[in-house]
Length: 564
Image 1 (cartoon, rainbow, N blue to C red):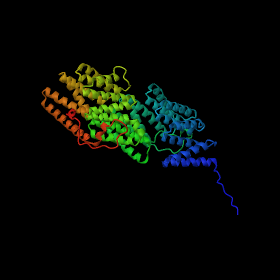
Image 2: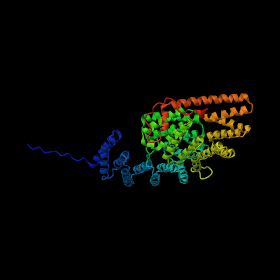
Image 3: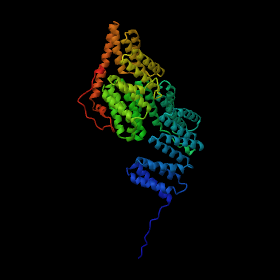
Image 4: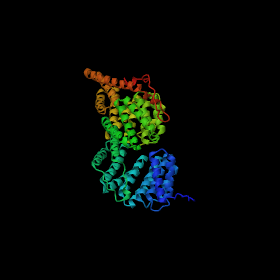
């Protein structure tokens, strides 16, 4: 009996492409088998290009495949794939916009912001042509965000003005409208904060906080937009809530409202912990790192060095989990370690940390912040005049200051005043410090105001003008208590003790001496605790990724003289 072999029939092309897409998607999202995922997605992309009216499979395959290539560090393979998909998707608004966003994001991750801005501009014009003002606003706001990163402020201002008009005029889904307003206001607030204008930003920040409250009361509308180009959203509202907490912390820290910064940091971190149990989005880790960076600076000011050090270690651990996160935050991490080193009087380590941070950063404002703090290290060391003069010339607030930040320029005047004070050039020091006071008062920069007042008080004390010294030191102490700034409180209480003693006010001198003793003991105890932690060894790390483990020390090895 003859048996005829039954040959398997090739499935229809549509079924074959869709099956490859589904298999590739499952393997990509739920396994670590990248080779098989890539093979299925490449077949889905190849087959679907030959099939008319098969856009969803075709462009989803292209989108997933380019993501996979990027994960495998094959960015040069992902880019032409996305360009081709963009070229052939112009009749499919949703996918055309989505692929433009994806390629723009890829360029952004590569720090090619010019190409990313060009693509977002193309997307904005395309969205306008297909009648989607909502997605046009998303493209323009995204472009505005990149222009702010590039410091192209002349281009940012007209773009944000246009965005504001589009957002206000657009009538659509209330949650989508409010999310656009949040995006718009976040850009405005961060623009002001980058410029160090913490007083000028208050109206925008208040609007932003009201806006997020409105969003939290709105229910998600399940009715899909009629225009497929509108099928986008910027961030989930839970993420937006954390972001608003974050910019509020940034503002509170700059303004010197450190207890408020602590309160909002606690709220944000609690929300983040809940979100991270259900959501592994990388942006949540970025939010967490930025929040920790800010609260660490607050801790160092309020005299909680041991807690700050443990939080620096926490940032290290988060960065160990993500090479990209470490790449984006390495300079900030070394800067924080430099600030910690100053607080425990490890000046050689502080210099090494700041030098490392300068090598790693391309961000102008961060560069100026690091240089300002490095200059303070050289001033304290007292024997680094050549390096100090070189630094001060690069951050000369009277001539070609390198950044537009009001806050950093005010700080540069303070550093010059501090240097002049240590050199005994008191009239010159007073001129610089009065400039700092004028600038800090204009924008409610409370920490700089307190530091300038106490240093002016010290100068008048040295000059024998006790009345004027008292007029400076008393408000400095009041402001430092309100912040609270432990170092300025310590300095002010010492001056008040000496002033009252010189003026024969024995009771007031005794009270000030008692305050000074209390502040000294608190700082000393915190100093010993911090230097005894195994994480204290982080101060020696200046190269490569953060160390994984720390060996416990026998005890503090740094000088405590500066605290007493």
